[in-house]
Length: 497
Ligand code: BES
Ligand code: ZN
Ligand code: ZN
Image 1 (tube, protein in one colour):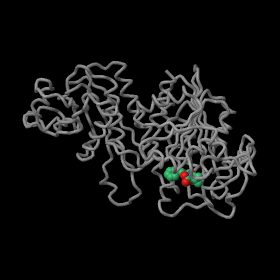
Image 2: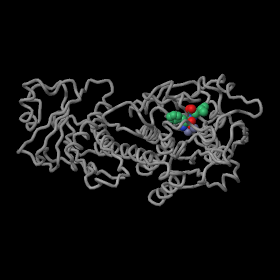
Image 3: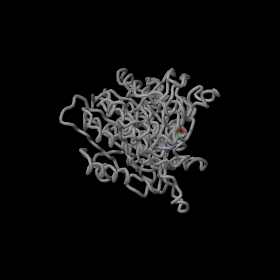
Image 4: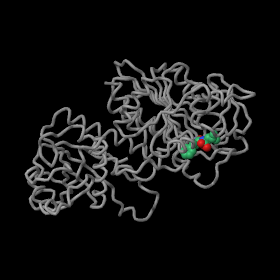
């Protein structure tokens, strides 16, 4: 994982050394007097031709001998848009694309409107940096040729500001940390199922413990057997590799709340004996995106040190068919003693999350728990690739998550938790069954999890439609989106203030 540096400077824009100097320009700015002199000169012809700026989201590149950076890029921004943060994030994504085209290593970014020093709103700078770093993402492939030719992305971003206030420094840092976390989650998700297994989740967590103020506890197969975690063990039964339940615990000296995050870490979901169709099965290496988001958030939390205790839990395994694998019709017993009839071995996510939720809540007594999982194909049918599904037994928690989601532009849509769906998963021979038919598939999955959280305020986020193939945006490349990482971090930031 590359670490892009973010620096602040009060130097005059034209003296900052960089491969590219960028100014953002208000789309409604028309008079040359409104601009930084460099821009006024460089854009004079664009302006008189009426070619730039226009609607917002355009770029204009020019070269200037009057500045240390030589290449200058102007990016137009629609500051009247409804979601200003995301408009700036998208502008950042656009800048990153130009950086890739020009193979830029060092970027200088003016914080003020039209390159002028006044009004350098910190949240705009934060969104710009976040967008640049999210857009500057690429996964180093497994190709052996052309390695040296590959563009490695940005090394430094220098933010040009009028004053280096604490607010501006913090904003730049929050933008950097959030983007880095999302890129880290994307990195893990990109890894193929043979390179990222349950063990890799555990190894990464252990490394974090060494570097940061975090406690790490890993449950292996033996402990799971002792603790009678029948759900995780069942999902893992056909696998050649043992499962892990990874726990990371960030506990500051002073805190009011304990927040628990649980992420589905299914490193390859073949469906097991209820085998998935071959077509598209390769995408099921992404079935660990919830776990990746939680692990990445824990690293960011360790760096930012909020005033909340945050516990991250990742039940991790793959779901494989073999002679010893779980079978349709089997009955398993979960950690909390509930028995479950297996209708489909492909509905494995709820099995591993159920044990993690019940054990995590009993062990840490959190004030709230949020699970995030690529849980159901039905979530894609319901919401497409634009919203993740949100289920919750607690209005306040759901509202706080919606607020965070609006700020990070990772939209959630509320879906029902209702006794009718619990009825749908009643079994004739066990307490519950793991599938309640096709109707309302995401809601019955949530109803299943509901059995394992007791009265704890809980939210379940189904990211099956958004973990990859997420709505196209300038700062979201093809492949895994990192969805949920920034949202959960934002939620923790608000709770831990
Ligand atoms: N990991 C899948 C859900 C999924 C499907 C995520 C497509 C992303 C894209 C999950 O384990 C699964 O297979 N669910 C089944 C449940 C069914 C058997 C009730 C599904 O959605 O088909
Ligand atoms: Zn499955
Ligand atoms: Zn799955």
